[in-house]
Length: 213
Length: 213
Image (tube, rainbow over all chains, first blue to last red):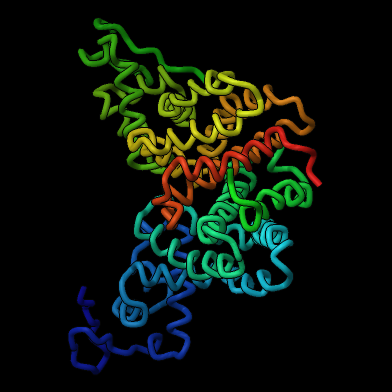
């Protein structure tokens, strides 16, 4: 995809290189684009988000968006990597104790992220895009795999460590869907510590329990 | 809410009353509307689906859509009730054996519905709408609660039966999300019987295991 270059005030127009304008030349253009991209993906989802709207939100030329971040799926990757910031704490959580309490630490951590309305909205926006669009799903999958799954699996000394860590994650994803997205009662209103107490043992068994029957 | 009545063949057209056309008068209009509604919701999601497009798809006047099904959320409820047809088998599955094997029966049944590409697409369309829109989520929640949750809970002789059955369902929802929607590997390619063998014990413990710690 070749981005069309805008002509600058006194600059001769050249293909593939965005001309600088006052707004573009600020050192914050890259940050503004990312902020605008996160807002656009959150509001409209991956499918309907447009580079043009992101550029408009950031006050830059669309070609500059492409220049800094590449095609739409790469902008999306950068946006969800930022939104997925809580995942950066994951390695710390994972290594904060032994494997015997990993299930409880992970359960409390993931539910905590969803309990916070700000991070919940960001996660929900990512889930919406991933459920609606295969490319968005692939971007999200790569992020979750590299940031969470392989790290959790790396802590486990069991056969099928990857599959086990995915089943543990699946349980947490499903609890988040029913409690925070679909809001099924009584789960949606249950005390979060009660939910942790009921879910953590199942997560722990997936991670480090005896071999399955 | 008053539904507009369709006018008869010789009736002059009045505001709020759809005139009858040949297409309207066929006994299949109701069915055609439902079919068109399912297609429209699947293709565009709850948010973007329009009564007008449903009417066009069915070859009827928009007022007839409202006459038969009421407002958009009720059309959606009728559409997903049809798409959710596999859930009609649920009572049979639930009662096909004792509580000791309920986890395994439910796990095999739900994964089986997702394994089938036709029913998978229908479920995925419903999930997309429910994740994107609160009204759609509420309609879906009511259906799942009445068709599945309360029936499963009714089989259990444990405290917190509803919460337990929701946590069991949450596990299955999460496995479906990671395996069929996000397609995380190795879970996405694992043999379905291996997944059943690994997930069913956790589902069973939620349904009928000892009290949580």
